[in-house]
Length: 267
Image (cartoon, rainbow, N blue to C red; front, side):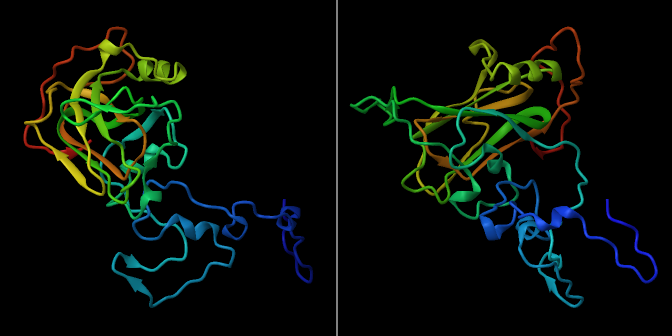
């Protein structure tokens, strides 16, 4: 603890300031993910120089700040990645970041699968067969019916997935906790198809609307599966929230619920 300053006496500096700051950018520290950096990026936190204040400096987003500053939250809930198979080059949480991806580093990217078969074959739709897969599971910001899905491969040109699919399910809070402990070894029949296996293209934002989606039930979680590997910049699951209660009931709720009309949200 730092000594309180007294008249005619300097306060003793804490011992830890003599140590090397291992989070500093000067020794290779990096910010891997931030939920929001609308006013000022989180990278400012690990700068090696002292923070500064410029009274008259403004940006297009507001007051210039030499630190990390987020927007004020005014909406309930927030989506989150609660499970994944591989995050070698980038965490899946980056896919639900704010705005468009700034680079390939601002997305989810897996390691190259080394167990792919020596001979690659396509089906009649040009989709790779038996090539393996990677997956990520997301808890939606609010239970609801998904009516539009966006899968963005922007900045991924030679390392984008060949195809993807999205499944949904409904889980209580306790069931989610159990699945996290079990590494999401969830029985296959509990996942309901939202987006069937779909061919992807490089450096493109793919938009799938209600005419493409297969499930019109309320879901609380979504699983994105890519094949065989690669990277995605953004994932957007949009639809209508429902009023389902997700406390810890002993019985699992039914799959169909009334949906609040006229309110559209990014789930």
